Length: 123
Image (spheres, helix red, strand yellow):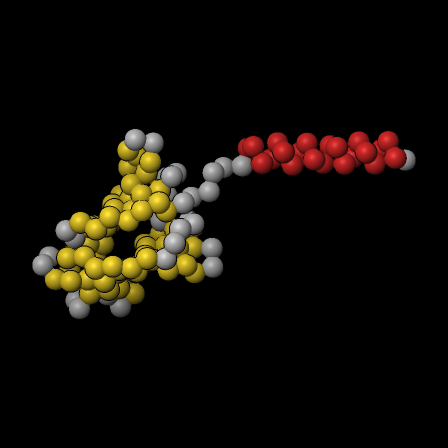
């Protein structure tokens, strides 16, 4: 009985190690750069964001790890506030301005990192 129990435990531990090796790398937000009318978000692997629009606020949601941040950027000469917040397993990017915003995003790989460019303009 001890031999069978030992073999079962050994098999379980080997399976856990193999599963850990084959698990994909989690998505981490490394840094945020502000540009004129754009935000550049840098990730370690390819992000898969989901865009939302609510009452003129541009919202981008992605499953990612990262720290909460906030700042301001210029959109067509006007100031807009952005904030990254954690909501359960997701990280939310919200951009708010005095006038309703419309945004587009595109991801590209540069030097082994992924850059998500978020372009914003007033409606």
